[in-house]
Length: 351
Image (cartoon, rainbow, N blue to C red; front, side, top):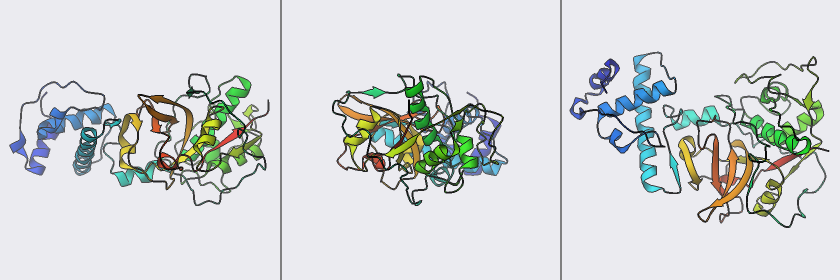
C-alpha cells in the first residue's frame, strides 16, 4: 500500500523517517488492527487513513489532522496494551478512536444523578414474590427490543434508556414493537431534565404519564440536538404507560427478578477508558459506582462460567457487540459492576 502525500507530512512534522518500512496487505482482526500495524510509522499512518475513511472522518486543517493522529496513536496504544493483558473482553478501533477520553466523556455521557430522585408510585416492588428465575433471558429474542439507536454527541442517554424500557413493556403488553421518540423527551420534558445536558429516567417516566404518552419515532424523529417542543396534536397515536417502579437499590436478586419480566432502565458508570473502545466479551474491567450514563438492561445469561447482564447502549451499532455490552454480574459488591444495581427502574402498563 503506497504511503499518501498526507503521510509524507507526518514524516516532516515528526521527523520519524527512521521508522520507514515496507507496507503490505493486512488482514483486519475483530479489533480493527493487527500487531504488525504498530511496528513502524508508515503502517500506523496507513492504518489511521484507512480508519478515517471507514468512519467518514474529515478535519478542517492539517494541524487538526496531526492532532487527531496523535490522539489516535495514544488510544491505539491503550487498546493494544489492554488486549494483551485482558482475556475476558477486548477493545477495538471504533469511531471514537480520534477522541481523547475527556472529549468522549463530555460528548457521550449525560446522566444527572444529582437530581433528587422522585418516586411517583407508592406501590411496592412489583416482582418481589417471583420465585423461579429462568437461567437466561434475552428480550431481543422475544421481540421486545428495537434496533440500536445513536444519541450522537448529545448527552441524551437518559432519554434513550427511558424509551427502551417503555418500548419493551409496550411490546410485552400489546404485542406491538413500536420505536418511540427520544426527541420528544429532549424537547418537552424540561421541568427537571436538561435535554442534551443530561437527565434522569424516573423524571422521564413521570413526564410520559402526565403528558398522556409518547409519540412514535417516525412522527417525532431524533435531531441529535435540542429542539422546540412540538406536541404533534395532528398525530393522534401515542404509546402510554400507567406508572413506574424503582428496583430495590443494590439488590441483584430483585434486579434479576424484574429483568426476567421486562427490560429495565439502568444507570452505570461508563467513564472508564475501556468503555470507549469496548468491542466484545464479558466486560469485567475497572469502573466505579459514580453513575454517569443511562442504558437499558435487556437480558442476562452465562458463558463459560461467567454470568453477565445484556445491556443496550445508545452509541450506535458499530460500538461494542453491535451496540450492546455484556457486563459481568454476581460481583462481590452489592452495587454491581459499574453500579448497575444502584438505580434501576421500569415502567408499568395496564393490559
